[in-house]
Image (cartoon, rainbow, N blue to C red; front, side):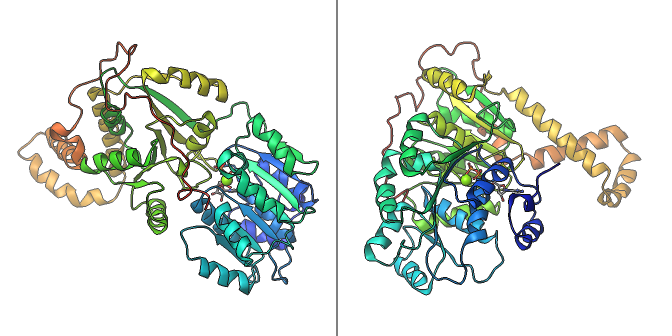
Length: 472
Ligand SMILES: Nc1ncnc2c1ncn2[C@@H]1O[C@H](COP(=O)(O)OP(=O)(O)OP(=O)(O)O)[C@@H](O)[C@H]1O
Ligand SMILES: [Mg+2]
């Protein structure tokens, strides 16, 4: 028998509302975590990216929160501002009760606005630690009635950059509160730390044979010796022609540089990192979600938790610092049962990191060669044929038949069809695939042994977490 939301202990009204919004069957983490959370247990919930952890902690809170009270009863902490906004929206979408007041609190937005809302009465707060602490210090946010505290992306929240803030927040909330930690990853070192904040927690781990979702097709490409990464990226983008893509780089400067290069080549692409103002960041995410911009070049501030419907590709232009970060980055695609492609560029220096990733996700990854011009052309022709087949069964074709009849008096039918195809081919090919902007030559695919001498051959330096970018 398939589990239902009703059997997990949620009210009829809520279940009916969930069904209306397309939530008919609970995901495994929801099925296992919701009953424990409803019964008041502290909990660590571990489940793959894109498997509905937000509703797993959101639903039990909404089920029990007192909507006739004006006090803050639940708080969810997230590592980035955009994630706070996204979780806030997700929580709101799980309820239709007008008495429910949820507030996102994060840096970069007017604090007065947030204070105003807090004074009017809010039951659920979703925030980043920096701004939450500010509001606690000012006395505008009070946690004396707090019954539920959730750390989303808990392992990240317990990392060095956040731990002190989180501890300060915890020390100001009632010890009898219920606490839950959720993430797709939880290194053993962090788990010990987590145990400090929870009272005899139950751990719910959704068993998976592999740490990375199988719905994500992971492809590794070796950058040929003497090639820069940006040169290697071009044929990959031409072959894949991603509908939508998040391209991860290491630094803000790299994001700006790569974006500029891709824009110059005619792509629909923009940059996303901590140097942008909060409103620029939010506006870009909106444009990305509405498909007004196809690709986004981002730093790791986009690696965790962000949900963009049907994101087709994740590209690791630079490898991430940690293997956990690899799992979160690629998890931006292949969400909610969908499929996705994750591409990673490797240089000879990265072989060790590749081994670490393979060990971590318990999966051997194929390392392919940079696509050749012939492969790109072949893929393009394949796509053209698919489009042609679609047009053949459509009804708009009828209006062109008289032209064909007329031309057939003078030309061979097959020649007419071929000429029309050639025109379509030339027309629909993106500008950057035409002329000499394309791949000038194919990669030498025989020798990757030694150190490449491209633009990015220097050993990358780790970036320091910036307090303006995350967590405030
Ligand atoms: N029971 C359900 N039925 C249908 N869709 C669902 C269900 N639960 C969640 N979803 C959808 O799945 C998507 C991913 O959910 P969510 O963002 O909570 O994933 P997550 O586990 O938190 O991932 P991450 O580890 O990346 O943060 C969302 O669009 C959400 O609306
Ligand atoms: Mg999440």
